[in-house]
Image (cartoon, rainbow, N blue to C red; front, top):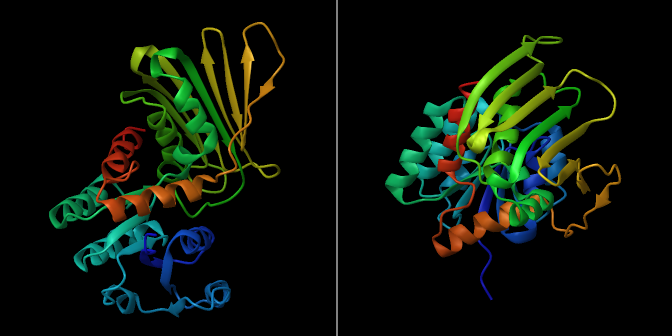
Length: 295
C-alpha cells in the first residue's frame, strides 16, 4: 500500500477549509498554515493531528512535507508558490494562480527548472457532469454553448479571473483549444465590474456565450447549456440532463458520487507520487490566462 504523501495546507478560509478536508482524506496533512484568525484556528482544531501554525516556513523547512496546497488570496499566490518551489515542494495552487499571466508564468518556469509539479484548482473540470460529457462529446459535435452564473457576493475579487476563468476551464476540459473574442460588456453594481457578458468563438465556429452576474441576491445557480445537432445537454448546478430537438422533456443523467474536489486532489497526489504532470497543470492555467486577458 502506498504511504500517504505529507502535505501542508496554506490558507484556511472559505475555500481553504474544503481543501484541508479533501487533502486530509487522501494525504497526510502535517501543517495547516493560516493568518491567526480565530475562525481559522477553530477550523484547524477539528483535526487534532494537524499542526496549526502562522509560520509558513515551519512547514517549508520540514523535509518530510512533499507538497504545499495554497488557498490564500490571489495577490499572495506568487510569493507563496515561489517559496514552496524553492523549498523543493510540489504545489497545488488555487485558481487563477496569480494576478496575471506573467505571475503564473514565473511560477511555471520555476517549477520546470526544479522538476516539480504544479496543479491549478479549476475544480469544475473534475465535476462528474463535465467528465461524463467529455467521454461522449467531441468539440465538433457541439454547435453552441451558453453559460450563466448568478450569485451574490465575492466583491473583493475581480469576476473575470475568478469566475469567468472557470467557464474557460470548462470549455478546455471539453477539448476546445481556440478562443477568439467577439464581444465583452461589463456593468458595475456594488463594484466597478459585477456583471460580465462575453461571447467567444471557438474552433469549428462554435459560439460560446458567457453571462456572469454576482450582484443578484437569492438562489445561487450555475447553468451550462450545450447544443448539438440532435438536441443537447443542460448542466444545472450539480445535475445533468439531456434533451432531444423538438422534445421539451428532460432526461436526467445519473452521475457517480465522486466530488470534483476529491477528483482533483487525487489527480494531483497521483502526479506527485508517480512523476506525471497533473491534468490541470500550470500550462493549463496559462492557457486560461491567455483567454481571460483578452476579455
